[in-house]
Image (cartoon, rainbow, N blue to C red):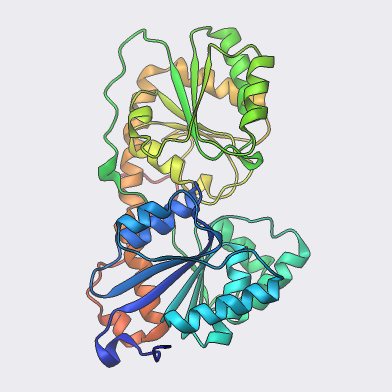
Length: 393
């Protein structure tokens, strides 16, 4: 039987929040959802997850938390799937539907309207190729039925404003955050030990590991002892391993596959590298900086909102292996600078990307959509103000 929709203050029950995702596969978006669920305020919010396609490998993590995970499935046409989703939403009767990325948003906004869900919150986790006119048009339609539209970076927010015509009254920027307590600052490196860099993330075209490997080839030509660890898995792994062999880097580059716990690998590295051609706010980048690693990252998406070039690491242009190699060599030639930037990186994450503050910002947003007065009175910590880029205290 479908439960009637009630606001939390009308009967004292928790706010029912459904997170709608495509899948619970390995990725930064999925980790964000897991953190939002894991740290939700007990007694005030009751989360669950709905997957459009399949559950994925992270579903067990949600089960361990006692959070239900439902699957809509891929059978049938898009309209048929929207109708199945709407029927499911009528059954679970959420107060808030929180959609993540375009596919979930396009399905979820319409299904929520059909199911009369009181509020829809959408999170845009990156640029998401909104340059495609058709997708932007569909997003504009879905946004009409969306209560609040959250971008994880100012860069993503600019895309939302310019290409998706998201009204300023609906748009919010909430940066991703991490639990810094899970990442200890790596010990000071021994003098004269070989340098090791690390990159963590899904092995996909958007991460552009090919450019990274070409840069590493140039670095190894100058510093033969240099090594790189690649943590992650995905559709481009076979091509990546083939390129590693072609470039003669078998002994210099380790492709270690997916590891849920990466703190140990980060602690063994000297600096982090991110070669993506598009990003929102990278969870892997934040985790590396929390571990006291300076970062060399491409100047795309939200990376410039995380890395302060020359202070916590360096920004480089995308698809530029020569520039990337030069900066990686520069990092290795300045051990004192590595230590200094690593400490600054940790401080920046602690100050600006605190996970618990992020969770509370979302929770306040849920309440704001349902009951503005209750949102103002809720006993949640205030949002942490973001300092201007480049300012370190």
